[in-house]
Image (cartoon, rainbow, N blue to C red; front, side):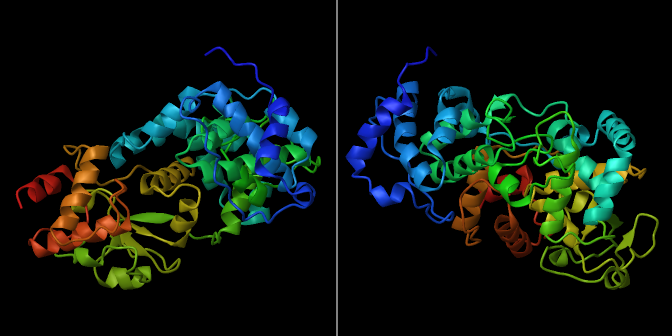
Length: 422
């Protein structure tokens, strides 16, 4: 797209006049918790470079009111370009999913395991120091690094300011991305990096371990002691330490695993395989839930049984550290990917149980249909959003129990086909 040459500075005065700007507001920062609603633009301008620049001129006053210096804003936003590809990816990201076994095949591939062991060896001195400082397993930090940027080899080439500006200008999640853009500008204002070095993914995640600007502001650390929290450069030290700090700040328990693969006994009560039923592993062992060698899992803390592939797939006892990794990414597949990759980097073996490989993942439309049909049948999923989270799993389990099916909470195509016959 050919850029429309309209200066933000040329537009900002008119935008401030139209708002009737309070002169005191330009020098008194507002509370950081304030979120903004993106200004409305004429329909013909939405999704265009001209529309983005008009939005940016309006946003400039709000950013300055939040404490962003004029020179920082103008330097960062000088070359922003509307990126239609960012919007396309944001619109389509929920359309495609993988089964847990397909995801793990890539996330914990032989190559990723081998590269993870190499990364652990290469950065051993640094990672040992980080582990001592934060009490977070170095293999878990390396596994996140591996999944987020293939150990730093794919950190993202998109200009973060431009991506966030495009997403903030777009109406779908404007308030969220305006907040992230403000935090990105605060990072620049602090001097930790420059706009041309602030590169990342299309959605604004940055650096070796893909921090969003808000997470960076809260958790990034200067572990090298050079006065900058540099997660973008070739040296991964600050990024790895920041990831450990992030996990520690969310309650990482030192010495506790994320989870352990277990076998379930014949006649196991699948109604207790949920995140709310917490028992010590010794209590689970009394019910026949044992590790893959037939022994009780050590009492690392209370745990619950997770069945990511239903009754026909692998089972895990998961601990509090599972929920900590969820703070990085809420998808069970991601957490299992990080946890299992860290185990493999440490020298552990593959998952020993099989998966229902004949199943395929439900499409976006099928997940919507599943939730709609469950709710209509009296098993309310609370939301119709295509996200198979705890509420939908509970509804699936209730439906299965009412129909004398194995109540494992597994949202499969077979279950949807059963609902279609109701």
